[in-house]
Amino acid sequence: MNFFLYINRKIIFYLGITIIIFFLILIFSKQINQKNIGLNYSKSLLTDADISEPKFSINNESKKIYITASEGNFINKDEILLKDNVRFKSNEFSIETDKVIFNRNKQTAQSTTKSMFKSKNSTISSQGFNIFDKGNKIIFYGNSYIILK
Amino acid sequence: MKIICKIILIYLVSINVVAREVGETEITTEDGIEVFQNEKFYLLKKNVNIQSDSFNLVADNVKINFDENLYDITKLEAEGNVKFNSKEFGLNGNGNILIFEVKIERLKIQGKESKLITNDVQMFSDGFIEVNNLTGDFFIKGLNSKLINENILIKARAIDGTFTNDDNKKEISFLNVYDENISYIKNIDTEMYANKINFKKDTSIIELIDNVTIIRNDEKISGDYGSLDTSSNSYKIKSKNNSKVKVIIQNNEQ
Image (cartoon, rainbow over all chains, first blue to last red; front, side):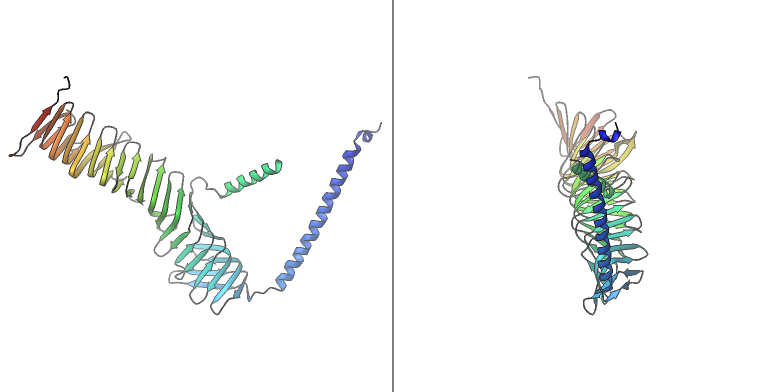
């Protein structure tokens, strides 16, 4: 007798169903991804940012802190909301976060989003930060975690 | 069940990713950190927990001075409910304030019920306890100051002296004890009271000055000046011109 006649029909049925469902999921997920890409693309075209790829700096006697982000919006004459990939970088440290309010006049920066500070052999993660006194003083808010190597 | 196991596994892996590695120091705070770059210090605020391979410390707040970078610690000042321990150095203790100067290896613990316990010595005070690990000098000052080691118990308002390491064991080589009320020292078989008590290991002499009482077995001898030779375990007491040495011998064979 043919070997395939020994295989339970139920097993073949369920196996078939599983394969069909798998391919359906694959097709739908691709379609969803394409839609998302389309949405993101249209969003980027219709972005409400006042400045794209803004660049600023905080200067003091001994060092310069460069500030970059994906986009920025003016809140008022002095304050700018920096959004996405916000990065503070000096020779001694860097800080990364998602949102920062930067004051051009006072040379201060304030964030309430999760932040990661990195310097030589040390990292600080916190729930936000405040840079003032021309970058000399940095306050990290909330539950904070430091690793010293 | 499998899903639960996977979730637990992912959770454990994510914890391990965050946890400190060997050789690293991990610090957590509940109310943030203030970094003062020009002044070269940072403040760790509220329920601070410091964990490293050789040293653990918890305190309400901590100030850390650094040299070049944050990890380059020169001085640590912990305040409020300070508790620490070091398995590597065999010490633990607690107090209200702890100050540790890294380069000169000086540790100071202040406040009521301050305590410093090492493998060989136990120190207590309501004032402060200060130990210099490089020189071996120690100071204990304040109410309820007390030093205990294997052979000796000292109670006084002020105790200072020097430890030397003999066969990896801390021994007192020099000691100055003072209490305006009365200082107390007890060794294996003798109790000594005086306002001022000095000891030098070189001479093996314990010198007792003012309001001196020595109690050994059933003898109790009082005077103004006394000395006890720890090598021969003999002692003598003198008195000023206008007072006399008083000897009380108790008879316990009644």
